[in-house]
Length: 261
Image (cartoon, rainbow, N blue to C red; front, side, top):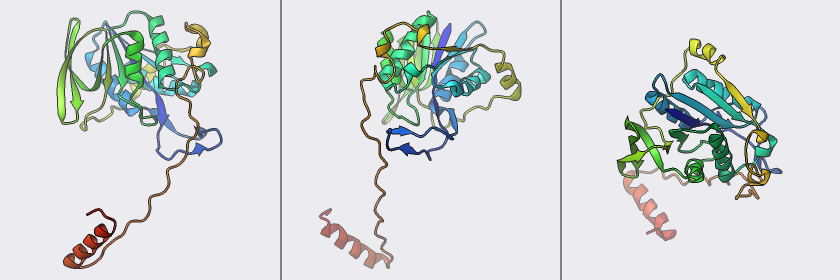
């Protein structure tokens, strides 16, 4: 079996700054980490892995993104591929999915593709489904766990608004994972971190892939960002510090004045 896990490097803190002239995040000096949703689904893939199976982690980014892939290797992935090229800069979710589909087609046969349901920076939850559409394979989203995997069929537990459902699928399939509240990210031991240095981590650029250049990056994106701005600060609320009966009377008066009731 061959499992492919798509991962992303994201800011480690929510305290990020926006360049209002370029409408981009200011990346200099920002500490980054492996997207938590991606680590969860990687660990789900590792639970299914047998000795003869192979897990390949893929990411698009800059040379520093290699540290995220090294973490994947330390956690248990067998091989990593970093797609790094100026051609890929500015990709929206569609262009990202297109780029990932090209590298996966280049890799060849696979059985399951694992993606985080979303990333903590973009939160679009679009790349996984778009990648499945590009590859013309079925998908299951909001996957909390793989319940059973035998032969060419698997059962997964998928979160819903009011609980969960069990979904059956044939492989190949794409699973987009969302961690349950009980999930605690694993920390690779030192020996695995050292061993990861000997695992292959390959860097590919545009020349290693197929397809016209205008399908990648900002040129191939369907969404063009025209403006990024900070949301306005919330107005200070009204606090009523009175005895309960008086407080209720004042609250009703205010709600009536604003035509809420």
